[in-house]
Image (tube, rainbow over all chains, first blue to last red; front, side, top):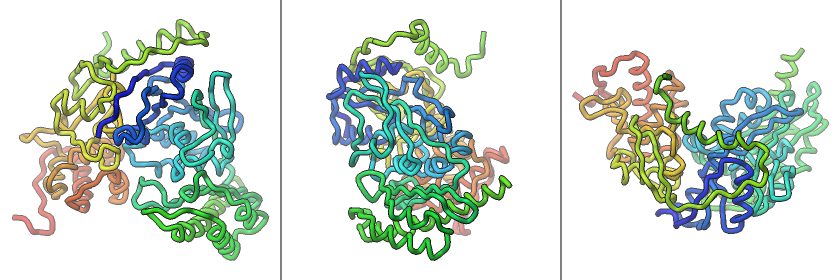
Length: 293
Length: 206
């Protein structure tokens, strides 16, 4: 199928984009990398009357280090972020997850901001942002505001973005001194995750001081389970602790089944991945500690 | 005079940026007009192509229907099959997930630029020799991704090849032959020998 007719504008600055959103926000749709939106247009599952193409807004393409955070411009291509030495060094969890976002050809076009703003419940980057407790910067007619990850993801494909608002940048807290791992199970490399998990741990010697887990593919938004994080916190990461963690995650997580995987299967996989991710993250943290000594 | 290489894209970029620099503090920018048609110029296989297009025309339809370059195939039209893969400024993209207007000022390479029936590209030869295709529908996409992939990783492992090609579907199920073809194409490109002797698989041929 071919897209239904629409009107099109390609602004060259944030200001022009804001003006367009102000004029056409409710009937229009922002086009970033287009790797999720264009399929919807081609299949006529979405028929916006106005498309605002962000691809000429060059000022939204950057990776900056600022006060312990890495700010990634919304229009930075996933492939660019994947190859960035700053991301590799200071955002190892994001570096783990990026190669899993779609296929090579998708990441060439797909953007970091688009992946976050689309808020697909099976996408990797929202879980990364949630695990790191990062935030996004949003620009609207009233100015700029910052929204924390937990407040930004509202439901399936729904965020706190207003119809006249634009995602400017995604801010990931740097975590080069912590241990992290992103793992997922998908039908084939590059497919959406059946279940995925991002884990970040702070280790003091062999003891885990703090653990964060964020799951994707098992709920409308990235899922955190504070009780599961508490199981590991303040303890040595032993097989026994990990087994307890896995059991608790499987018990508490509440995914829905679909044609790709049943709810029971997703629960089981979530428990196993949580265990593996915390183990891998703790090992990486210990290796970093050894290197620093 | 500067060399012509890459001039097209840079000129466009410069032209796009200049007006904003002249007026950097403007905050109440006017909304640019909405259009349904637009004239674009795209560099396709080294030739500048100018055309007026409807904004909803996908890049693959532009390449096939307006430029008559039917080597790029339309498969699923939602980014799953990989048949429409082309190189945009040297990087592989799905041409069904882009609009032609978005390619304005950029450089496109399609399978037509890879080789000719008389003079196949080493990647095409390797696909032929390893039975990396049967019906051939998916092949142009595989070839373009392989070209970009081998530029970045001249000596890939079989696992790396599988990951790089995961975004392509082949329904004649010759994936094993494709992986072998890419591996051999890498060897041919490294050796710089464009036409090595065909290799029979499993001794079944000749």
